[in-house]
Amino acid sequence: MNTGLGQGLPESLRQPLPWQVVGGFTREELAQRAGVSVDYLDRLVELRIVSSDEGDSPFSDGDVRRARFVHGLEQGGVPLEAVGSAVRSGDLSFAFFDASYWDRFGGLAAKTYRELSAETGLSLDLLQVTRESMGFARPGPDDRVREDEFAVLPLVRTLIAAGADPLAMERHVRVWGESVRRIAEADGNFYLTQIEVPLLRAGLSWSEMLQAGSEATVMIAPLLDPALLSVYHAQSEHTWMANVVEAVEATLEKAGLHRSISHPPAMCFLDLSGYTRLTEERGDEAAAEMSATLGRLVQRSSHGRGGRPVKWLGDGVMVYFREPAAAVLFALEMREDIPPANLPPAHVGIDAGPLIFQDGDYFGRTVNTAARIAAYANAGQVLVSGDVLEVTTDPGVEFVDIGSVELKGVSRPVRLHEARRTS
Image (cartoon, rainbow, N blue to C red; front, side, top):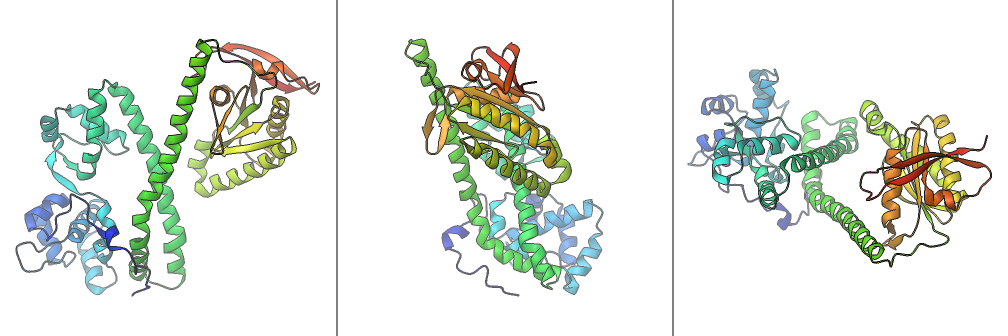
């Protein structure tokens, strides 16, 4: 079946990755790359799950993927003979494993972790921990290394040589692994609901759906990496710029040149408590619904008080206010409106002070402090800094002194106050 979805793909986007071998593989090479024995491969050929042509290098990259996949099916309890029967009858086809978009993924290298440790000078434990930190099972010393890990090792080696703490690096890689896992799972769910399910509803069989989806993926897959990388670069620029702004402000303050302003603006961070746990329990659709409901409440309340939502954070929002008092009233109103909307309770942090505006976003110590105050607040709490308290005189609001607290990422203690409606 040909839907035409795979036509027009530029040849430059079909180029193989460096680890691919052009010209095919021998039986021994395929078995090594697929992580199976030669005898097992012969069984796959006999069952016509993997096809063999004449010549010195009869097997393809698609055959490597088919062998690995079917081996995984058998290990999971699916009878190999049943798979072979379905393939021979035409009810099941693994032809999509020949598509070029699978070239993005690496196979198994010939090296074991033990051998790689001896070759690179990196400890075996560090190599195992790095793989585990990426979100996968901890490998054994004699397990073969995945080829895609070779792109991570130069960074690990450089960071260690630069004096980075291995434990800190492990935690950092775990953040990478968890964040990218969520992106990959969201991509997979999107593909399922937007491509596979509509094709099945249109009357296609599973084999026809896989083939049609494969043709669509040939166009989509090469665009994923550049798009994701561009988003990462934009986020990195924002983070790096924030660090630079913090350094400039600290330098000016140390030199006695950082002046306070008489009517400072305010930055408010509002987060939903337990959002991550709830999304894991209820799924992505429920998370999207909660975000949409929160968005409607924030837009209505903030605009009514002269505020402007600057950045949506999945489980919360960052809102700019020209007047700190308006930020406090917004936060108290949101605290009251969120529970009736069937959303988890919010915790809010507000700080007032100078802000630096660039490319539609705000930077500086005020932003960082407000975010840290929000993280410190308990569910249902609205906490503000002393700078907010000094310029907020609304008779409908009272403040309870919390005391000076140490906030992560803030160089000095911050005196916090809890905002409440006047009794």
